[in-house]
Amino acid sequence: MPKRHLEGKTKEQRIKARRELGSLKSLTVQPTTRARYDKALQRFFKFLEDENLTLPKQKAQMDPLISDYVEFLWSSGEGRALAADTVAGLQDTQPQLRGYLQGTWRLLRTWNASEIPNRAPPMPIEVLDAMVGHALFHNRPLFALSLLLGFYGLLRTGEILGLSKKHLAVASRDTAVLVSLGLTKGGKRQGAAESVKVAVEDVIRRCKQWLDAPVSPQNLTEAPHVWRKTFSDTLESLGFTSLELRPYSLRRGGATFQFRQEGSFDRLMVHGRWQALRTTRLYINEGMAILAELAIPWTGLSRTLRRQYLTSLKHPLPMLEPLPKGRAGGVGRRIRKTAKKAENQPKKPRGGKNVFRQG
Image (tube, rainbow, N blue to C red; front, side, top):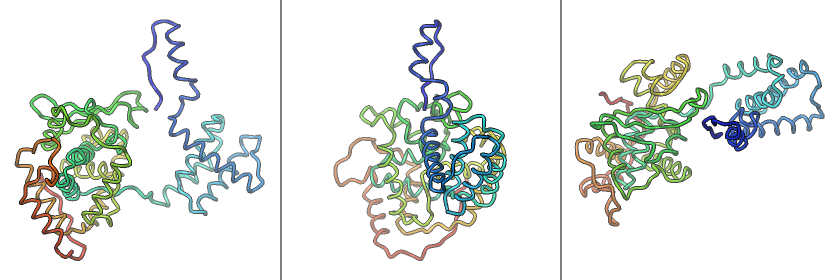
């Protein structure tokens, strides 16, 4: 994202700082957003070339042309994001087009109302417990912590991947974990840094252990592609691939879980950092509808690992340090044998109830 600076006291200081930032026009959108716009516009100009079309010189004639392109994207199976990026990119390069593309925007609204986006489904709390249990069994305590922070902190995937020790602090008397997120997606719109507070006991004690351990890594996660692969591999190992969960499912699942526990949209909006109540309602209503129809495909292994994680909540944490080969991340021999036994048992037919943990 673009850098920010404190306004200099002198004219010379301001000139130097602004020269490093670049022109105001280059700062109107984020670099990643501009890259999406450029890619979409390249596709649009290629379409014009293939169809032997040229851009009209009058603004009023642009709307029918772009509307036809949106219809072409719809009929050819492209995603709505490409259409939206094309229109937004055109208005970014030619701001005078604003107000002249009413027909195009009407088509985009119709597209959005007619086709439900393929969003990440919310993660049930039971699946989270099983994934954390799996991570701890395989000596991945920081991966387990990243899952817990993403779920209970309602963090976006990029926010999870960017966390390090300097972004976390445990409140006095160990009552909560404070997570500093900097200029997030919503913070950029408001021009202010954002933060969240997580008051879940197991998250607090695991964060405190990580922060206090002098030999532990500074970053919470490994490289993004490694973390994402670990996420998908864990789901596959537990037999949860059919749920089609993605990393963003942590945020959606955490939001749905919190609302079911508290029933307050106002508190959820603050925690999830949403600006509009309507957006929050749609987010939660869709998530609860998905969870109501979800059947978790439990196996003996996944049930055992979830049960062992819930049991571990009553016991002190094992030492956060490199362990000799052959030990399973601080998990006792009895737990390891139980999990191995469950893994070797024949798998039962997929199905089962989706019962939320209370309290």
